[in-house]
Image 1: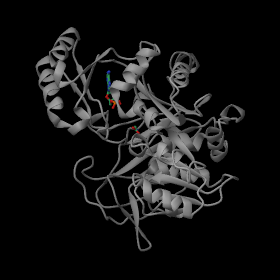
Image 2: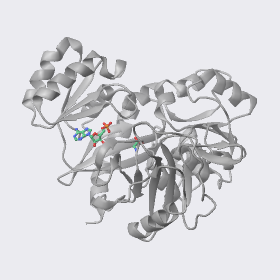
Image 3: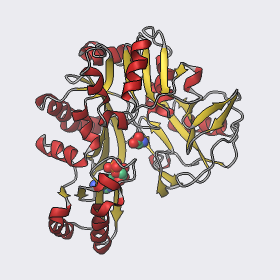
Length: 424
Ligand code: AMP
Ligand code: GLY
């Protein structure tokens, strides 16, 4: 099978890395990819949202399957683009339809979906410039802090948590006034949930599902979860508090109703559902849905999947996922992200990375890297994810940290406390 992966981060490198051992893989292409994916397959200079160019490439290169990494092409309808064209409808696209992608593309759609299917989540109200007074009233009915979310995609920046009502009302106005562009044309106000978060990944063919290893990511730039939000500074899997009792609740109250909701509403969905969960007094509630894998969670989830990934994806594409087995490694996997100094603010790219051949007992997934001739250089805020296995989380983490010491680039930074809140 010839496969094209869309995206250029650590997530896509981890997917490519897993696929290289598949007995079903012939040729692997990544658009646009990075220096890491270039060592596994062929990088192709096409943007994941340039659908006409992707079509031309897919036809010329006999692509049988497209695996979509990031959310933007899904929300823009890449699935439908290929399925609705007679010349490309034979190509399997791993990802939801445009309608299904609304679970991530519109927080209002996602909240209504959860309410329709009795899926536990924070109380909410959706506000537009026409009912802003209802927004003030709803805020007054809540206890602080206050959660405001831009309805549309805002590159992970569209959520504000405010401590007092004066600021909350002011920010509601700002958001509706265009602070996040059109993503904030509607704002979802939510009750604040207090608990510990984890990420549950589900693979579905739109009929049946498999639950992948649960992961926890560390979004803040600073130690002890302080400072600005990032795309994710590290991850661990499995997550000790997501034990069997908790996961039974997650499956019965969240995963099954979500998949059944997709079926009942006739939504075409052949891909990943990423459920951002919070555990509040032992009870799971949904913080958000994403319609793709997480990054850096993929860099710990993929290494724990022992089954042939392409075979699982074939099950997704053909609606036979229930006939496939998902085998999971019983070790821990951890990943620590090395980032460019300054990230998530301004940073300088093009820095030479050394030590990549000096790695023992870890897997280095490339996120923001590119090749400059033969040399690997930095090309983004998040640069490398250093993943390791261990019989314990600590053993895995110590391997990642040991190998990080061997990798050098100017002004690099990483968090030294990944997993800190799971060690108590
Ligand atoms: P989201 O983009 O919806 O994942 O939100 C980003 C982050 O904001 C989440 O990972 C949570 O840490 C936090 N958050 C979102 N919604 C809530 C909520 N209702 N209560 C508490 N924290 C929240
Ligand atoms: N790591 C969180 C995300 O991918 O959205």
